[in-house]
Length: 602
Ligand code: ADP
Ligand code: MG
Image (cartoon, rainbow, N blue to C red; front, side, top):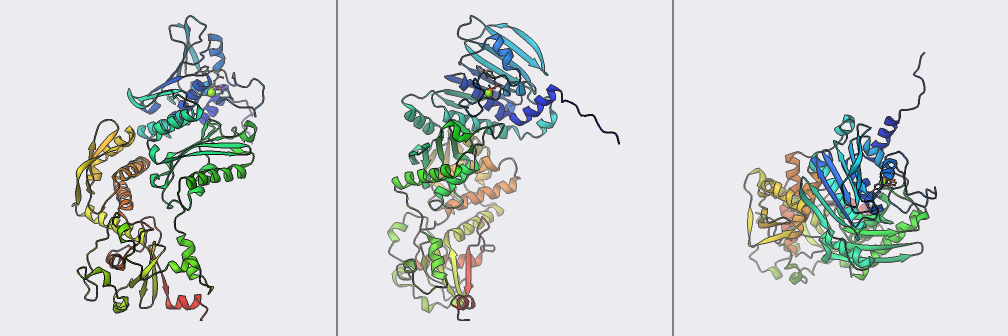
């Protein structure tokens, strides 16, 4: 059988393979160019893009610049000025492979203009389809301008994989934001189709002050952030993290840096999640900007061509340090772990007979003691179920609960007997007992109400006495404005209010006293995350679910027996209330038989 001869791949193919790795999408091109500018000592970097980066990416800096000889060399593969000692471990600069420029030039029309400080004029090189078409002097200020046009124009296979323009722009903003956060001494300006998207000046002050100022500028939630300042043998961790109250519905607002490089690393994000595990509900995510500094030989950045992954020599050490750093910062800020609800339940239902301290929090009589605290919470004012045996709202609340008088067999979900850890409702049914997760159950009910409202085209809106202004970044405002119609169908009425704010006029009536700022932030996050892949119906449901999450009674809130029973009755009326919006059960049932088994009576 004849086979193809073994041959050397032609250079342009090798370049394309490398290009495919380094420049999968416009955001990677932006990253490589901006990192080069940073390496060149730029104090100000301007990035202008059009058509989501496919049409044009222009990066201009005021850095060291190159002379014509250096420019030509920079376009050769593996030509780099950054590995003077041939030691791949001594990588302190962003670049080091010397392959970004030739790779990008091989898949675009590439213009390089540069002028070093000691030259009177600049030079221009144009590479089109792999050929040098212009090589001549030009007038230009000191620094470097690189323009990349028609990206992947000749590599249609690659172009096909690109997402919608909006998504690519979002990826570029995210990339520039990360680079800007890690390099506070440099000013950045990013614009798409001449519209400014991100502008930050070079920050002043000492290193820490500059970092804090830049982080605050870019995160916008600085009031709810606490500083992290941690030192451990072999590394330091500094930056800012959110208090639980400032958590978000998506994990996109976590910025991690290792030795000044933005990284997206599972081990690190996992450690961050772990650090917050008992302080945040599972569907909430911390906001964080954390800078980890380790000796250069303790980390391998050569793992991934786009270099967003890292490999630590001793990752357990770093992981442990990160968790400790975050916990220490939260402890210092007075953030306590949430009630150990899981432990309390496990203790209550373990097969051992020794009573535990947690089991004492199971109380039937303490229903009124936190009423004042509960006032600020959204109220649970369900109509009383239409059962003759049910208690009436009009009866005096202090003495209306005589559980024995209620007949459990009337109601499938039984009669409330009390609350555990202010999180779970325990109710007795004719054949056993039921434990309800109050937050999950209520969230589900609110979602069903919103869905019904939407299906009947009757949004119940609650107009705000004073319309609320919510400040968000421009992209978030764009998303909300763009989806104002959808939001209106749920009773959320808003309009654009200048460049970086929206004005909220009404909120869905099911939400009693929503935190409007937080609701809008989460909705914007949600719309941005789910935009491209979802149909309108799916998006509507995401909006409803996000709204529902905000309207629901929280875990940790004390409920009166009256409120507990109201919730149980409402659950019985609503189909699908048995699972929460995230697919987990909203209640579990232990039959008499289950109990007997647990106590080994059988
Ligand atoms: P690397 O950054 O890995 O060295 P690149 O292909 O990205 O490889 O760049 C090649 C070389 O071109 C760099 O080492 C640097 O000397 C020079 N260079 C690239 N961009 C700039 C810039 N904006 N300013 C000054 N020099 C630059
Ligand atoms: Mg480079």
